[in-house]
Image (cartoon, chains in turn blue, purple):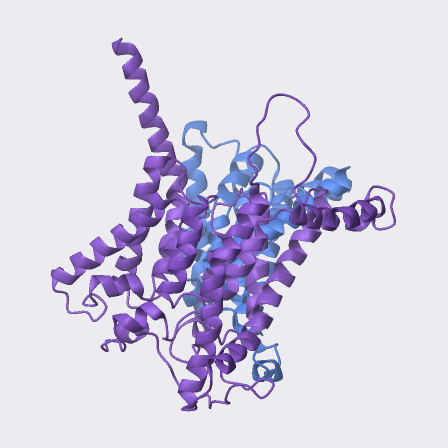
Length: 209
Length: 386
């Protein structure tokens, strides 16, 4: 089991976090990144849900990859994902009802999240379960941290709170500070996302030089 | 004399001089003051005596009547709300004192960003901000806090201009993007009935007015379902509440004449905005809608709100408007029509000019494309018929 954390396996985990980030580089999963990031809490929950689903879908598909007939593989992948999404959705409804109401259809729409299909097709169909698991967790977390950053910026400037706690002091409001209503609109998350891509590109190109 | 001073200073700012970090700043000021002596080195090119810096200066001059009147109107509204009387000069001075910080903030933040970007990319400073910086303070309500203004200016210069590649490359009019940012980010500070009045005293000028005093624009009143106060005479002179530069039709008309005489603005765009607006408003008039805004007579619609200001100074922006001659008619006509339609049919937005122009900015390239294609196919057909 020495190869459990071999270089290849570590790369499968770390690459999607930054150098091959699903949102920043592959530009996948944008719609949900824009839709659920008005507050920090739903962004975190959404990020975790996607991480869990990607990881286990990758494992399951990887386990049965040799028995899947090539011509109907998309349907089988979808069934696996749909089952996992249903489990996550029911769990959220049972234990975190408020958040699941806020996320509304977007939990169900994880089924159509391009990151999932992309990882299943490109990675799990050709790699072993353990490596697929690492890749799934990495991709999910790569997606999640973008959501968390965008959600934090939007909640901080749009509502003056983080996770529902007031962060901007009352004195600032008395001095004339006003929350930025534009931050609560999806248009602004597009711009924030663009800024993150910009900063990330600059960082990566400097590093590779 | 200016030329001599510049020549003396130039070595300091060239590569290796002590102020080489400020090279672009020097360059900007030099070309602003005198026409650059550098000419193209190859090929045949004929330059007009007018370059884009001169164009910008003309537009700023054309804005002056509306700006000066806006300052007077700030004082007038303040004294009228307090019930006090004062001479014209006192009112104007008060307006000047209220207005000046806004202009300084707008130019300071905007030019600051431009200088930094120019220095960073090792480019010349682009002159586009001269006009934008004057427009932005003129299209906001007088009570807008300075920090909001600064934020909006920064947002529009970075996201509406620099990311597209700077002056001349922008899709949207940067001044309107700044206003749209304020409008969506801080709706309570941009419309309603609390923001059209300067409420403090400065240097013994003006009157302190309690926060509870409200003043609604005629369009705001109409959107609330009331009959708008004032008459067509008042709308034309501009002694009514509104964004600083937009109220007076007469002052804007002077600016329009300057722009048209110097050939900077296109009369096709300008006229078709008015035609489109008038026609749409007239249709709503005879349409018999049960809606206070729809029942404002069409000629008053044209004089109210930002319609004139937008038509003269914003819609005709040579960068963001349609460039084909035929396209200008369609572009202008749709701006006018859309502005009135938004006013009448959307109760959330009392004024539609800003959104109409931004929307049509987006479609200007499409209109141009259609006209160019039409010309191509027409000429092809003519050539084939021979």
